[in-house]
Amino acid sequence: MRLKDKTILITAAGQGMGRAAAIACAAEGAKVFATDVNRDALASLDGITGIETRYFDVTDAAATLALAEELPDLDGLFNCAGMVHNGTILDISDADWDLSVSVNITSMVRISRAFIPGMLRRAEITGTASILNMSSMASSIKGFPMRTAYGTTKAAVLGLTKGIAADFVGQGLRCNALCPGTVDTPSLRGRIDAFDDPVQAEKDFAARQPIGRLATVNDMTPTIIHLLSDGSSYVTGQAVLVDGGVTI
Ligand code: NAD
Image 1 (tube, helix red, strand yellow):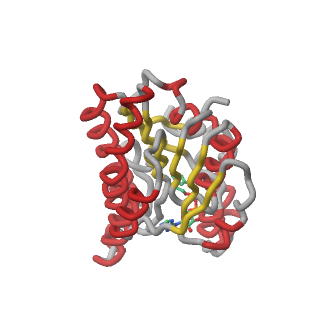
Image 2: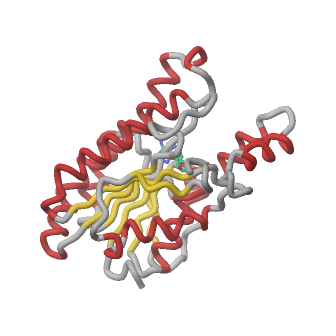
């Protein structure tokens, strides 16, 4: 039970990697607050031992402060929420840009700012606390076609991660970023289905992973647990790639 006695907040826990992380963290003994804007998806987590759900829109500044007020001090925070804008820079309207920045980076800044004081209180008692931010291999690490808004905001996540790590390294608070390859989640399915030939599109997504297949959410959960647990107590400020060999 690598997360026994730890209280962890996960954003975008209704589906995909956030959901898998909520279930895996609870199975490792954590008390998990699983949040999302999809009430039906959250309801499907009801009844799982260790998981409590909350409706929470990561772009809502007032709700962020209210949630930090309501919840106990956290040992772990997994900022998982994010969205994909599909297009080159020529396709990015001001509204698209603002939305990508708001969902992918401003939300993480606000949530981190709201919860870090409580995490530092926990770290003072236990010696450790851990933030995990969802970035991507599509960031400052590598460019991909049609992912300029996405990659720019996910690069900003790496800057945020390193800044937090540097500021609090002496106080027991660690901060790392997860950089997945292409993961088979409901939103990826949506992106595949939007192609004229979804069968070929899936083959193309898989082909860009040298390991030969799309990742599953369960390819991510061992690393998520590791980075939230004391097993990674000497790891901070890192962009941890789980990308099927894309960046070899
Ligand atoms: P997903 O995209 O299928 O699900 C995202 C969840 O986020 C949904 O449950 C949705 O309701 C929720 N959500 C959307 N807007 C929200 C908001 N404003 N507040 C709270 N919740 C909100 O899940 P996924 O594909 O696992 O993606 C999760 C994260 O992983 C994202 O940050 C994404 O950018 C990142 N990522 C995904 C991949 C991939 O290939 N799937 C690869 C690298 C990084």
